[in-house]
Amino acid sequence: MRIYILSRNAKLYSTRRLVEAGEQRGWEIRVIDYLKCSIEIMKGELKISYFGEELPKPDAIIPRIGASRTFYGTAMVRHFEMMDVFTVTGSLAIKRSRDKLRSLQILSKKSIDMPKTVFASNESSAKDVIALSGGAPLVLKILEGTQGVGVVLVESEKAAKSVLDAFYGMDVNLLVQEFIEEANGSDIRVLVVGGEVVGAMKRQGAEGDFRSNLHQGGTAIAHKLTRKEKATAIAAAKAMGLGVCGVDMIPSKRGPLVMEVNSSPGLEGIETSTNLDIAGKIMDYIGQNVTPSDDLLRKRKLKKDNIGA
Image (cartoon, helix red, strand yellow):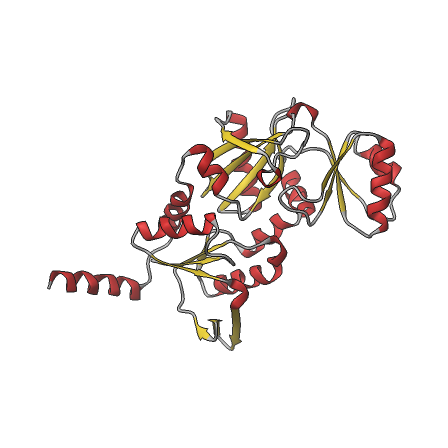
């Protein structure tokens, strides 16, 4: 099996673990910096070059596309898809997940519960947006923010109006969400692979911080999901069309509420907190969906014959 991991940094924990898991299975694993790739498009022929040399067609790819490189990264994923290469996360699904507003619209359409959310243009009245959101305290999120950056808690309507006016004045797109006080700064990250839950952790924000992201100083422990939490995570992954993803949910009085579905979830936090081989589960998912190409099978047979000679 020939697998390409589309990652900008081969030293990142998630990338290294995927390489290890693939090599343990005897597969040919290669890390490809997708920004160094070039696309060739001709009549009836599609190619990808890497540092000026044509890349052999892989059996599968694992996209690890950074949020700031979504357009170029998904263009590469789409090109592999056009070449009939299996991908654990499709280009369209990645783009959907990166658009916070679009992803919430999709989840709502599938009747998946979430915090009440309001989106309005900077021409809208901040007072009206606050009222529609249910009043303070409120959570404001920049649409393009990641890892807890660009997320602000405002505890009074006066403060909310001031922050909204400031952001709207800078022409920044915002989501305004109800604040789930009973969560106490915690959330649940669930890893879903091939429609099955393979691991879950509960993240707790640093003292005084309502954000639970590990990049913001939060901590994590293994979490045993309730039946409702498990069903919600699987439904969210299915709605977004993602074969591999992290579903972030927040506990509430009315049940688990989906905050976000991450198409390139980090593996370090969940593998460390649960002691589970999540990278191996991703490789198993590929193995269940892909038959190795004929040339690789021939190489494997030739190697075996040489050993026996």
